[in-house]
Length: 182
Length: 204
Image (cartoon, rainbow over all chains, first blue to last red; front, side, top):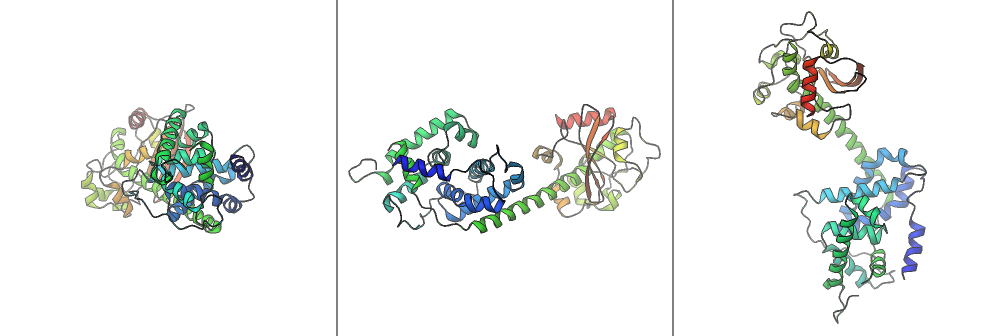
């Protein structure tokens, strides 16, 4: 199972690619960025806003960073996560549990219930831990890369990750009927 | 749950569909809006700084004061309530023909600069070196309700210069704001002691 995931990541990871145009980048990487944003926000519209804002903030740097040796996508990703953190620091943007949207789960290898439950369990985490989990286990960044993206220390990444995984293990969303973690 | 299981579960979630072309269009809208906001803020900071900071500097430079009536500045564009919101805001005496940058650098007040006039002279504010205006600069100059005054166009006719900083070579980097037009430039100048003191005080 892990091998399958890693193979897919290798195909999808195009962080150092040089894109034909800004639209080309958005067309090919937009859905992946949106997926990560959706895991962070659990709201389709907020996820779209988050990606759009990150792209808008980095748009002027596209030409400068769209070259070998630079990674425009890494820049967008960093901006997206820092924007996520800043949005949710605002008092008016009180985060409330939202209904998980009914996505098309029919093509999933994991059962729809498990797929939805991991989203619910993720939602129950503090946003800093959620960001670390999404970066480490969805974006597949290393601890050092995660720390750089979020502007925190590697030690903080480790501690946040450890706490988050412990919380997920004990989350009632992911417990089997017999009490074991799924 | 081990790491691989968590990785698998996260990758196997299914986010709602997103229209990439809409994303790109939205990003361009955000970029345009940010550019507009940035230009407006820069112009606002400049205009506000000219009035709020420039007058006491002129006074220290010995360029003369035109009294406390803001109607004597910038074509009388500032409303009385603005004046009352910040007692540093006063009328300025300066000759319209005087280059504010040159005045800033002059070891003594230029000749012919005395008495009331309709031009705000010069401003020194901000930073220990030339760089983009930052939020700290905004905090520096946005005092006494001047933001609202600028937003209403009341000080848009003010003229002056914000010295952003001076390079070791002596080149002064500045923003000039003349009749609502914003410009950026640099010039080799030696700031006079009063202007330098204010620049350093503003940067500290």
